[in-house]
Length: 396
Image (cartoon, rainbow, N blue to C red; front, side):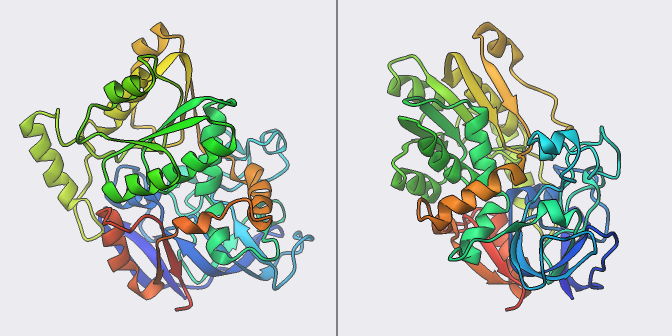
């Protein structure tokens, strides 16, 4: 079968690999009908999320059709349409039962303290082959796979594999209450859905911060008030929009590969950043994010009002060890962060889509055949206008 395989930083390839096999009674084999690209995949390609093993299939978002089920999978049959959660969970440990599937005790082969297990990630995340492939083996399929309701398309369902639950989780972390003013930093796919989730959870106003014009326009189309950090200092702008108080809640939807502002950065640092950014793409080179992540963290802490809450869903590897703790402590802020417990939120979000309450497929801007995956990654990596969320069709 064809699959997208990681070989080294900046080196991924579309290759022929063996089809997966059932390895445990609770496994299932799913024929992938739609997969997708995510910013987390770019972290792996750029090397800002280290620890990838050569030969690992990447990708952690997919929908498909069950083609084989182990003897322990009693609730799915061949032919069932399913969404695959990005994170892997056993379904029976105390964390899974409490809805914290991202902290499952059993899914990660590294043990109970190893952390979140997910498809297509580094060895620390379990080293599981990913979902940018024609077929995939799904561990713990009996409690992980989620059936797709009638009337929900692949384009809608693929958004529930990772980014819609992650955005919803971010709004929950931020503790949004009715009438709150919320700032969302980052208007990529997760940020766009964080805007939607904030409104659905009761926000009265949403302020979106980014510098990509097409993404800001999409945020504005959702009636978010937009701030371009290339043309104005975002903390000052947010305070101006809120009577000098700041926002009640912040959602950080940026992560480790933050882009630097066009102004306010020393010239030599800016030149180095841009040179490294130019190299940080699937054809070679390593992304080095400079002060991007710490800048976003500082903005978030300064932009939120006293006693406010920050929810962090942007991906930061364990190698990132800085945070503006002094600002947080002296403003009595609450900071919550984590990997999304996808399986906990997916059924309700699928029902919301099936009932016509939302259509996240409106954010799916590109659908590419898997044979064009390398060119698609280059466009996606460079944040080309219009390349917000990219789906891959393995059958095309």
